[in-house]
Length: 290
Image 1 (spheres, rainbow, N blue to C red):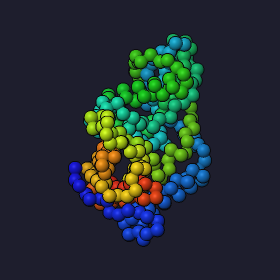
Image 2 (image 1 turned 30 degrees about the horizontal axis):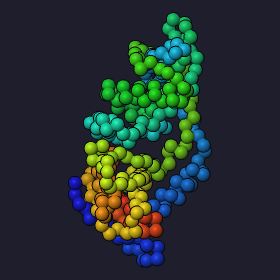
Image 3 (image 1 turned 135 degrees about the horizontal axis):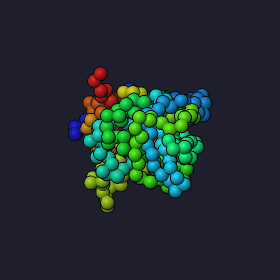
Image 4 (image 1 turned 90 degrees about the vertical axis):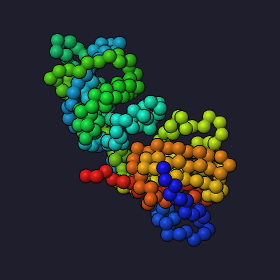
């Protein structure tokens, strides 16, 4: 963990902003405008045709259920974490990792014995699907999330026990699905990432609200809400390749956030916006070697 001395200035609309602060403000403003344009110019949904992958069999209270695990390049991929990083997040029982998937409508089918059953099509990103094929852990994780997602969406109770069909990538037919176009804006909101449970303070400093946006493939922006502060005096900010640690004056705030992206600490910059009472951080990313 390197102390990059990132706090460069405070932003006051009545003061002249430095070049770095102006650039940070420009990036945040541009991100907001592009997100609004994307939401108004794109259609509500896009139709996709998922490709078959594999099929599992389970049961509900009504009878046999088959889940076709499919894939499409139109589905956004999840964060690119190693299995060790993902295990760490799951052990902490946090919701920082999400697998985007499209849950299709139920369709009536006939099984191999000619008996009636229900099938569902669940689509994930094609690149992630190929990675999942080589990992029993990821495959079981996707099946678990898909099963729970179908239970929530359609008020089902599915048996957690399942088996994969051999030599049959899907049951019945795979229908087209509509996905929300807003899943693909250039500015992707990553939401609140988790703080390791062992580092949380049960009493003492407050954990501030953290918002993250991927403004470009190589630039991550953050806003940290600090409503109790009037300025940057006493704030500390340290950053590692995938970790952000912030401390507040008089132990008012403390944040230790794991970020599933590799941060270029040396090029990162931060500024406190006095009117919004927010710490804004611009973090260039270290791209994976090709």
